[in-house]
Image (cartoon, rainbow, N blue to C red; front, top):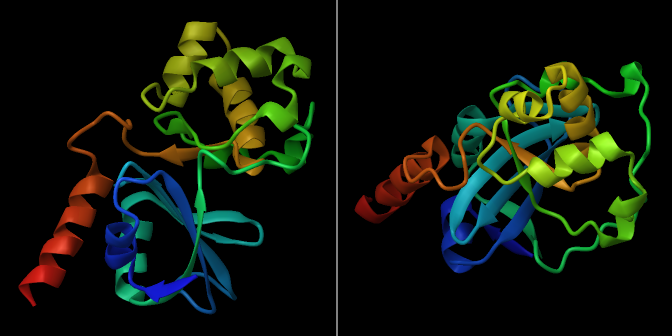
Length: 195
């Protein structure tokens, strides 16, 4: 566990693919305690969210700016390559349990967890097809187009994967060198080195 700001934390764990988590007692605009989740792949932030118990409340650039303003946090880091997922993949989810509207058609799903313990070969065919198209570059809408499925169906499946920590969601593709999260992080580093 490290107590430091996000930019320093990413610098400490340079070129690693990790998930960072930190609990915060209060964040403007969110009632009660929250969990900050940041996914770093090879030194670049690919996803950032501030979640409360009911799910993601703030994500993307806005979450990254808030985390920067929070300053030093108690970070727990988990290497993505070695992380194990203990729960079996749910085969179905009721509409009440699946807030697919939180997953925008423009969101980019990115694989972050190992799925062996979820036994993907036992998943329904549509879930396997959606998961196989998750590559960090295709949007939710593009996956739906490729499968000729309604976007809502793909959103629900991706929400199940997200809830099981198998994917994260980003506003930019992983291979985009002009990612807003990367630029925001670079500006954070520049601020720190010019002070």
